[in-house]
Image (cartoon, rainbow, N blue to C red; front, side):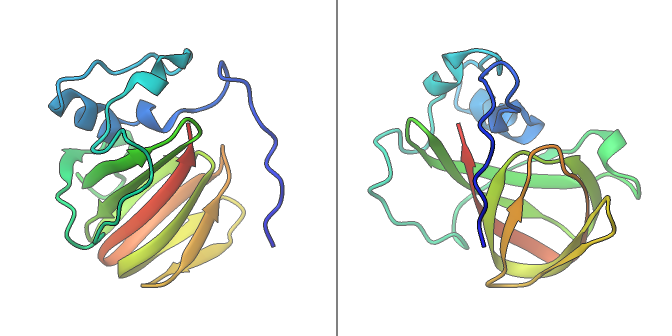
Length: 161
């Protein structure tokens, strides 16, 4: 069952484009990284700014890989890959990949579908989300997570802008 999400103001929302992975994608495309506390996030160029009328093979999307910050990698460096596929005025859609290893994060509101790989997400309250192809996950903003990946994991994600 999906529950209504309390909408945050633009000033307090944790924008997906504030993550290091998405910043590197924006930089690689020679576009300015927006200030997450402003509406400038709507100006980020994506692979297809034309909207959502496209089809992609999530397993074939070329990703840009960057090292996560050391404080998010308790067992050593982890380089994740990301590419934002499309955006509308309210949503961003992309592909993300995590190699074998462990990382931690503080999540944003996100819905995702695992397309390949396996592992688990361990939440602060002890719940475990098993990850395998076909898993649909729902993460809440502010949730502290530990990603333990056994086989390189690739997911398609959807977040609010």
